[in-house]
Structure formats: C-alpha cells, structure tokens
Amino acid sequence: MRRFITRRLVFCLATLSLSLGVVTEIVQGDSPSPAPPTSLATRELELTILVNQSDHPVLYATGMNQLDDFTETEAEAGGEHGRWVAVAKDSHGDDKVTGNSYGTLSRVRTRKKGPITEYLVITLPEEERITRDRVVYAEVLLNPSDGAVINLEFDARGKLLLHDLTFRYQPRSGSSHKTHLGILVGDELHAAPTINDIIPGGSCQITGRFTSEEIQDLVSLFDAPAPIVLEPFVPFWDPLLRGVSNILVPYLAITPLVLLLLFFYFHSRAKHSPAPLNTVPEDSALSRRKPIDES
Image 1 (tube, rainbow, N blue to C red):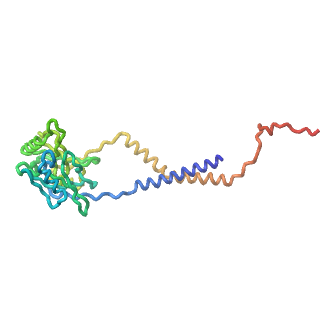
Image 2: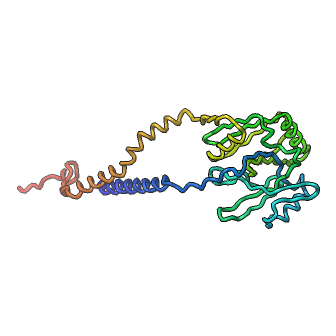
Image 3: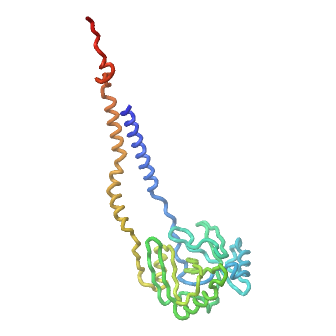
C-alpha cells in the first residue's frame, strides 16, 4: 500500500511539473507588439487651453453640435475661436490624453488605421500664442520606465504670456473646477496638465512615452543637446533575486525529467520484486502458543 501511494504521488508531481512548464512557455511566449505611432506631423510647439463647459459655455455648445460632423474642424462662438486637434499616441499605441475631466470636450473619429480621439482647444490670438519661438532652452531626459521628460524655458515675452494665461485660468476661490493646459507638438495633443496655480517662472514640462523618432524630432525642434538618460532605481535585493533565479532555473527545467525517471524506477522495482511471505511475528499470539503434549 505504501509503495502504491508513493508511485501515485511521484506521478502526480511529474504531471503537475509538466503542466507548469507548458503554462510557463505559453505565458512567456512572444506577444505581438503594438504598431508604433506615426512621427510628428510638423515641427511646431504651442501651449493652449482645452475648451471646457465652465470657462467657454458658448463655444462648448457649438462644439457639442460638431461631435458627429467631422467636416467641421474649427468652431467659433461668443468671440472665441477653437479647433479640433488629434491626441498623440504613446509608444504602446495608446492615447496620451484620455477622459473628459472638468468638462472638456472630445470626439472619436473612425479611420482605417484605428480610432483617433480629438479635443476642442482654444485658438489664441497671434499676439498671445506661446510657440517654439519663445523657447530659449530645452532639456530632454529619458527614463526607461516612465518615458521622456522635456523641460522648457521661455524668453521674457514667453514668460509673460504664460503668466497671463495661467493667471486667467487659475482655479477660482471656492470652486473645484480646474482648466487643462494643452501642450501641442506637431499639432497633436501630447499632454493636458491641469492649471493648479499661476506659473510665474516661465518654465514648462512635457512628460510622456515617445518613440525614438519623436524624441529625435523634439531634440531637433528645440535645438536641445543630446538626451540625458536617467538610471532607473534598482532595489538592492533585485540583483540577489536575479542571481538566485539564474541558478535555480536550469535545475527547475530538468525537474519533470527527474520525476518521470523516479516514477519509472519505483514502478519497475515494484513490478519485479517478489511477493512478501506471510510470516508470523515472534511476539504474536500464535508464536506464544504452547506446544501440544502428545504423551
């Protein structure tokens, strides 16, 4: 009975190990990578405002009537001008800006290459536009885990325009509403941070996942120096775990074979071993029985 249980146990362990090996190969198999996003359309930078229901009620209503009319690319109402801009894709093919927080307005255009999300943004007057011409310094930082960070610094005129823009759309006292600052690169919306306070220093930061082509375009666009690669934070236990896994993985790979060999070994021994004799233990009741006196 004990040998039977041992054989069954070894067989179950071998089957389980083989199953885990198959599942591991399936999980670690090559998965199709998403198609890379297109390169930047034009080399231009612009800071603007996303249209929202609270700050631009009349223009917002006009944009609502254009949600299904994709022939309309611009909107004008109440002395304000706006235009629909596409959201840029990150290196994984996902939209860099999502959702309609604080009453922003967006629509989805269906195309053969996939859906494209568009947001309605304010078209500022020419004298109020904050563009590439106002950038005096740019720095590109590359983080392998979080993507790229572009730090921008504007000239005196750019600092004044950015101050006035954020002053106009700063959070109102007693209201939870916030306005989104739209950062356009190549006439695509790459980021839309909320304006939490006035920006007096004239600096701006663009974060997100960019393709290598986009990063090169940004470096050329801002005449920035070579990108600075930031070393990711590595916990002290990570190298130790990697070392242990490198040692154990080769042995785990041959575990199913070892278990199968053990199973066949015990199975062979049980099959060819002679049957046990029915012996009586010396201390049993039969062994202690007194012999019969035949005299």
